[in-house]
Image 1 (cartoon, rainbow, N blue to C red):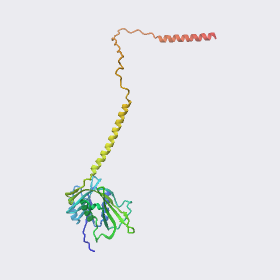
Image 2: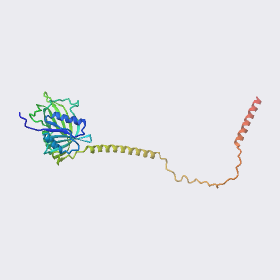
Image 3: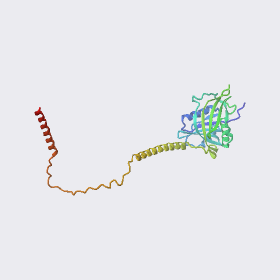
Image 4: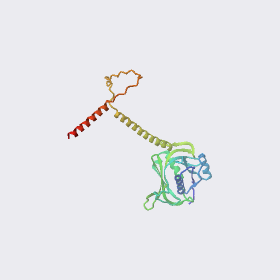
Length: 299
């Protein structure tokens, strides 16, 4: 057969991506024989530059990984240079290297593309379906492809997000075993042009990662405040319980104030007072001794 569909997909990223994103990008390159690679793009460059890069590389489709804050990953799917293009937030990435994915397939084999029926109900999902078909579908008789179909890419919609999975087709009983990679695409916007232009669709359910982190911080702060308020209430209750009976206003009615004595300045030294207690004690001692002496003389 003759190779007619000359789709070529450029897969590359911006600077600042982490290891997981790099693995995902390499996994997509291995799964798509019609993909091309390029060096990382500088953050300072505008996204419109990607259209020129696609032209130089002779590519008419593009998957671009945009990293922000070294923790948020955005993925662009674009039809260069006319458009449309779609921007997604990527969540829950799992790569081919993970051991829990036990499936396998031939390198360069063509995949089946399976789409959720929900893709045909909404116009923006129908547009994305067409974009995914053109990007992920390996052209027939492509020089680097194998003439076999042994795996399937599934795109399903749940929780207003697109869930990507890659399964191996086992010939004997047509069972599915997951190969990987897997990720979740949260749609943000669909643009008419390539990497810009008028907005065709904006997701009303989308919440930015910054906003999500802020909400988590506020929730934890609210919890802490609630704990502090509870502690203060407990302290107040304890104080109220420990209060004695209120003061009686009639308690001091019969207390008469003592008359103040006039201050006298003594010029003569006071005479020494004789301590009577000592004398008494001596007298008592003498008596005791006399008693003892008397008792001995009787004996």
